[in-house]
Image 1 (cartoon, rainbow, N blue to C red):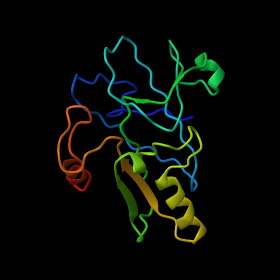
Image 2: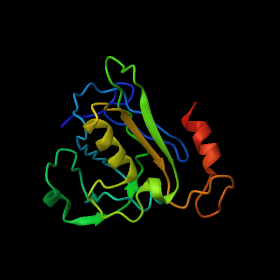
Image 3: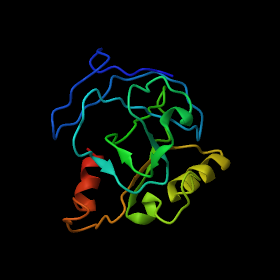
Length: 169
């Protein structure tokens, strides 16, 4: 387990409607290794920013569970949504000359239709194939269920073309 910091502080307060990044953390990883991120809120947050339909189980529990190592510590309160966390950036040191791959699109890229906790999304299978071919790549899944490519949606938010432009900045 590793604790993140924010501008070298162990905690932070994020104003409504804003984003925050943690300080970089050096941590060795292996291809296809799973990562768990635990968040702790000291006060009620109100409505949560979330990715509503995911293919990975999220565990919830009251209190400080930052050092909890098993699902049993979370009283089996689960969902298939990701709350608050938008992304985890993994940077290879030294950087690979091969770059990374980003899959971008709608429900198919997001994993809709796969079974929970099977890592069976399109991007997962692509990463496995590249590793098997001896060409491992960084993989970013920018899929979003319901994502219209050319038009904003009141239900699903910003059009895909605008999201892609942000990813490429």
